[in-house]
Image (cartoon, rainbow, N blue to C red; front, side):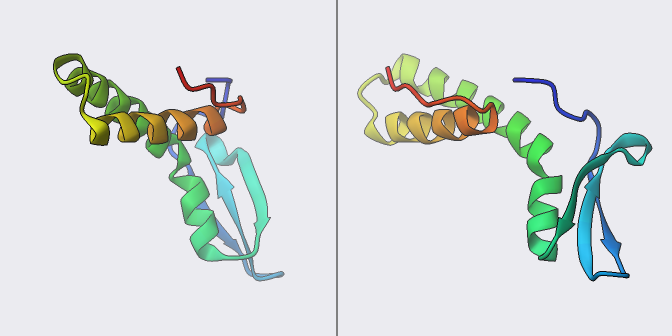
Length: 95
């Protein structure tokens, strides 16, 4: 994946304009002026979700190695690969 701000991301509220921001280590700005708190928390969870998706993809590939005709695992693989492609800023190309 391209470089992104490493470390844990946290949500902070801007009380002056009632918006939210996401910061990384050393309070480095990741994203600001987020209108909805739920969106801020989703953005803050992105690095962990990205890593979790990579692990999930590896597990699905293990299942498909033993059961290549498993339609559910094939669908899961495609969904995870699409999400990872979007997170990495690239187009998804199915095999």
